Length: 174
Image 1: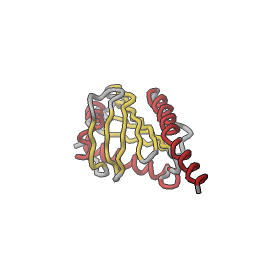
Image 2 (image 1 turned 180 degrees about the vertical axis):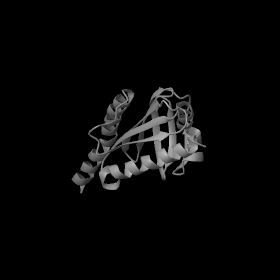
Image 3 (image 1 turned 90 degrees about the vertical axis):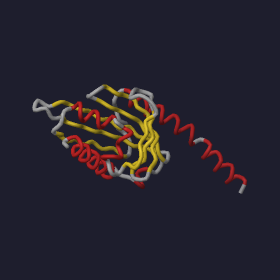
Image 4 (image 1 turned 90 degrees about the horizontal axis):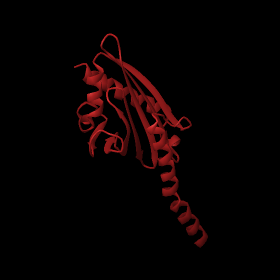
């Protein structure tokens, strides 16, 4: 019994350190606009939106107002200006996520990291102006964490992207 308790203590005592180390790696990748290619859950999606890149950028970066147009997000709050290092918290599908902006290149790229339930993620958004005045929006995301693959899959993430992109398209094209 004593050995079991000691082993459990050692196992759980190392979780924050390994989680911190993983988060440092995640933040480094994100600051370069990259996802974690070897993550167990990842997806990429894109959509053409018939609105200017400026309009799409405004909607995407107005984090406090995400719940007004994205039905799966029940709350969102940014804790400062839209710049690298600024944190924001949001609740998506019932999961509270703590995020940090890694890149905010106006009208072209937004990248953030996030952590929830011990899972870490990188979400990359790229906007490209089209000759017809529309915008090609590409999103790529990776997620990693202990037993994440048991509860969430790459196809689940792709479906989440589809919901995000379709909501963004509807709102931007209004």
